[in-house]
Length: 112
Image (cartoon, rainbow, N blue to C red):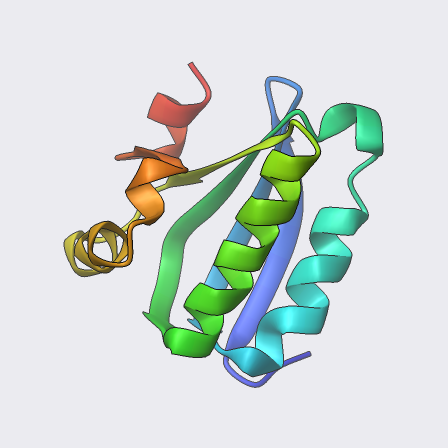
C-alpha cells in the first residue's frame, strides 16, 4: 500500500464505488488499478470514484486517472467522479478531464 493512500471498494445501489483517501501519486497506481480491475467486467459499465477524503493529487496521479478513463472509454465503460473539493475540481477542468468524466458534488448526487 502506498504511504498516505487508502482505497476501498464499495457499492451503492449496485454501482461500484471506489473510495479514495489520502494522496494519489505514482505510488498509488498499482493499488488503484487492482481495485478497478477487481470489479467484475459486467459491473464496470459505470464506476464512481469518491474523492471525499482525498487530500492531494499530483501530476502522476492525474496521469493514472487519465489512463484509467481512457481504457474505460475504449471498453465502453464510464468512470465518474464524486466529492471533489473545489481545488481538485478546478484542476480537473484545467487538464480537460471534465470533457470525459461526469463530476458530481457528492456521492449521493452521483448514485441517484
